[in-house]
Image (cartoon, rainbow over all chains, first blue to last red; front, side, top):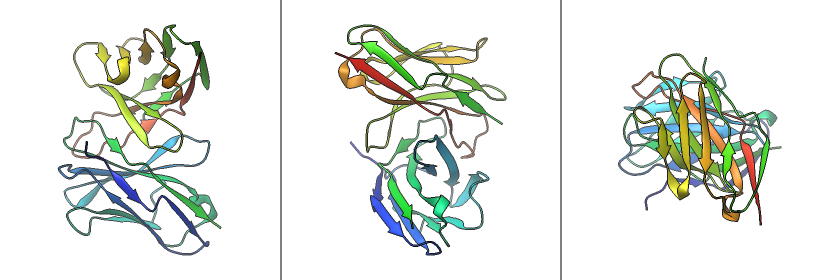
Length: 113
Length: 116
């Protein structure tokens, strides 16, 4: 069964460094998402991406964040200058059509020191 | 703004008994509602959804949920609980806007513990 994959599973970085989190959505899916879950808190929406552009973003998704689909398979989340409060589990998700459910990847745990 | 409430941090049920995990929502217009389950160190797995139609929806692993518009609720149920159902359950809602502008709003999650 096809699934969303994410790399790396765990990323440790120093405050102020740039990080890129990578996702490979399910191959025939058209809608892509990033969410984060700070330890012990709820899952929060960051951004949705469709037709090669951002279709919605939350207030969390400020100028430090960017997303890109550099080729036909990868979907990336970049944090330009990480802060301690960016430490969280980041989930990528994708779906095929508008009224379908989203399928989530296993997540990348980002630790900012 | 849309929101989801899961009033119980934890639900304890004996194996074989029916279970209910509660969810209420607030959204403008018709809601699209989802339940996801998260096992330790895993991503979220889709269980079921309500988009339109029959208020009782059936999903994976014997779970079902009942949409109640007047009470703005979407409680998750299962007639007979298994120990393997023990996990963290999330209710989520998206508003009626389309075109990819459909980020999910999640509840804080409910730990379901099934006791042998």
